[in-house]
Length: 457
Image (cartoon, rainbow, N blue to C red):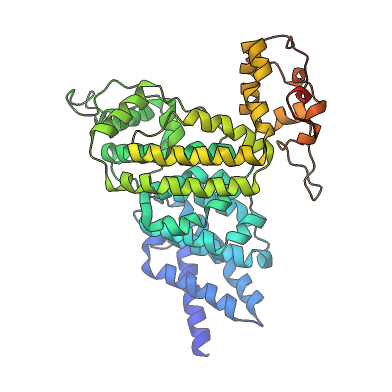
């Protein structure tokens, strides 16, 4: 037996033992030799030209079982599993076609069960971004909805790990943008500073963020535990201490079920949600952030967020269709007055908002007529309000289809939620469903069409 064959047998035996019942079965990541063995087996499969498919078929059952065991051990594991799971995911992406393994469920499992617990681990965060960049093209083509679905989790990763991971993260941002994530991604980028504040409050009150899934706590079947965690995050008290010191800096009376906290710390994209900046909870958090010294992590994200917005707006002007940009502009106008209260940050963000809106209006002047709706506002304020509501919901597929109907992609594929603006002049304002129009029953009293406000060529 050659040295190469002996190495192969040794590494395969190491993985096989860890995949079966063994001393490390309940915590595979605790075996220091396991990660090295998996990497070497992957290298063997790539290097063997003649017999590679046979080698892949031999190692796959053990690798797959190891992945399942590692996932099952996450809640009890004292070791980080992220790097090991990423190496296994690379095997699935490289050789999935050979063994007929669909990597999509495995990728989603990694994000939901592992990265949600280990995003604050700098080693796992770095390895995750490296994995996403190495496989960027494959993910965009084969799994186009993966990163747009989990962009809130990836924003938590960059918010916590800061500028040292900015360069690899910037390369990932393009993959976060899709028709379904385009609108909700903007407020999430703008609110990165308050996301840092929220994460730091959770860490101060509940300990290290590594190894505990905030999202799983939010979805717990025990509401009292969620309320206790929320109370800790906002008041600085510990669970069961009756509320803590009334003189502490975080002792302001706060609604522990405030929806913004849940919205900020979610892991998955669930659409465009209202962020209630006027709530007492938010006011208290922002006041504490203003009066307290800024952490290094907060200072870094205050510098990074405008640069991330630059990239977002570049992608928007290059790739987004008119309906999405038109729906984004009212959101920009609203958020212009609700930004994290740091003087330099507000200046940098507002400058970018203005530059983008000017560029959007220069590219599509008809947006101005549609967004001010001067005639309808003069005739009836309710019509103006309804038009505003309509524009804000243009990203809803069912609403877009009911108003302007489906449009064809250049390759003939249907994309719900993409509006064919060439047909806008033939559609009546009255086509907008009443539940979009301020939930007023009965048809709208006006009967003018979009052709009244869309310029003719």
